[in-house]
Length: 335
Picture (tube, rainbow, N blue to C red):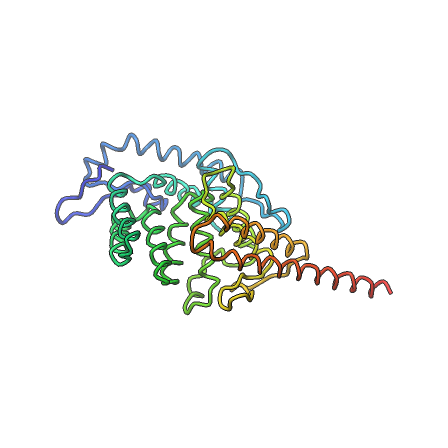
């Protein structure tokens, strides 16, 4: 709580109630430090209890059908409940208390302290100067200094992506995603980046697949990513917006943009479900919007514009073919 190191040979202390409930509460350098902070910490536990009671009373989020998932139903306005709601929407197996705990931890570390900012600035300067090895060292120092903060992981992922270390980049993006407030703009950027890498044919990438790497969860996730990067809601860059739109297009259509062979669409890497012609066409519309947005994006997203156009055309073609096949099937059945 005070930021001081414990005495030599001693370990940091933690609240017994936090340990029993598996909450991310504060750490203390000594019993005296813990006693001095108890008044504030007791109020924190009271707030946690209120949030847990409200989540238990409302029950788990009700999953919507794929057609109803865009846009996603609006969550409660309360900040804790807002993020906890989305956490459980993405993974209904999570208990109300765990969702509350994660939301608390995310919000508590949403703003980096000054000493962490200095490390992040040094890392970013090294990255921008092309010294990626030095940038990795600084970002790892930032992670060691504040392991619950998302910023070190996000920066580390960006460096690994620049160095074409796909597995390391995807891992770091998912760690950042777990630490950013769920459904925030930065969370959406990390989610779209991890999604893009995990859809590449990389050795070992299948070992990284998180709980949301399935057809239904990706429909929900991609809808939330698009919602969190709306230009009228936040100051999102064209690159991040284009990536979010392309992610939604790929999930809706089950058609991947050219990643391996130039000019040729591919298949996504998760186990695919069935798609209606309307979903495939909507996927094409998202790809089309991604291509338009990529015109104002920076590299490497700007270089993906042609691939988004190719994917959009493939979506519109497949949608028409499916509609024609469905019409022929209905006509045969009628005869």
